[in-house]
Image (cartoon, rainbow, N blue to C red; front, side, top):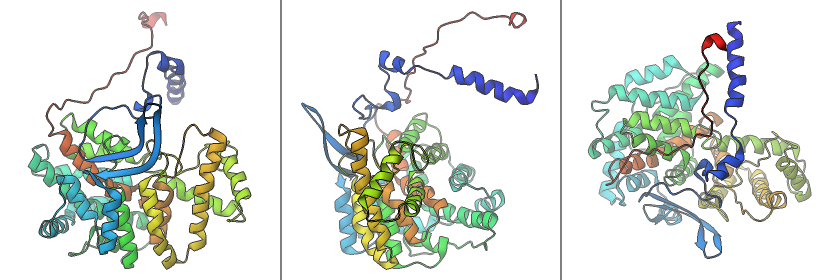
Length: 446
């Protein structure tokens, strides 16, 4: 047998070996995807960090309600509108809140921002390694750089609360710089553009520093909009895939960098953090194939074809529509849509935004026609985030890394909680084996 054939042979054997009848999941009451039959998540832990609310339980079952998201008990809607009213950046304040459980006063917040600025520059070796190793995926470069931070940490395996907090602040501080540098190398090596390594400035917010490092020039509104996006994506409870990954790995008491790198790998997937890219690509496609952006019949016809796997990529999906928890509305999408209008006006993209809003409305109605009214769906944060990134002038290659730049706050907060509550245990679910025992056949008889 030719050795080149072995890979094909193994793959064909695995095709049958991986087959598991769907009825077996019902027979053994397996919660596929850790989801209950009604679509709710299987309760596997407790947390005091974030709360995601999309429905309420009644005697008749689940009742859909407008979505709410809470950070340490504070309604995200209240946090965002307070920041907008005072016209100030809020990501650092949210980071302080999620890490500590308390809102900072002016003195505490100022000291925290100074600490973040002090930690934003990268070790020279890390910078050189980003340059030397290059890479076509910024998420992979980010994960690799995080693992490298283990080498430069004087106490990398210390899981005391003080050391975990120090590591968390350093990660929150360095993510923007790593992503900005990685993209600069990417555009230089892949697209032949000039190489710019701009160092972070003191007295700038994380959002401002990131825009400076990525593209140097930016408007105040662009910086405020990016800050808002970071605030909205900083935390989303312990049940989302990447945060759960961080908690699972943390429960083994592995080091912080290994756990966070695992979370990055989870977020990279197109069904999780990569979804915003899918929405942007879909939107560009719809702008081309739909001739009249105001014609409901034309829009519905094409969306129904998409849902029936007859158009676009044949997936049967309308990206950015539907969420595992939210039913009537995703509060993050509501806030983005509400606050994007000012940026839309600045960029002169009112027609595109109106088209996007109409697509959201019609996609939900078309979903009802195809799937029925039993399950209610809404747009999620990804439906608008990619369009806003595009208006800010950010390249698609960093959309998912930007998600990581925000979510590192939630990841580290959950890691600290996982390693510091009483009664903690290693997370170890069970899998039921459904293959009968077979007798071993000597190699001479096969």
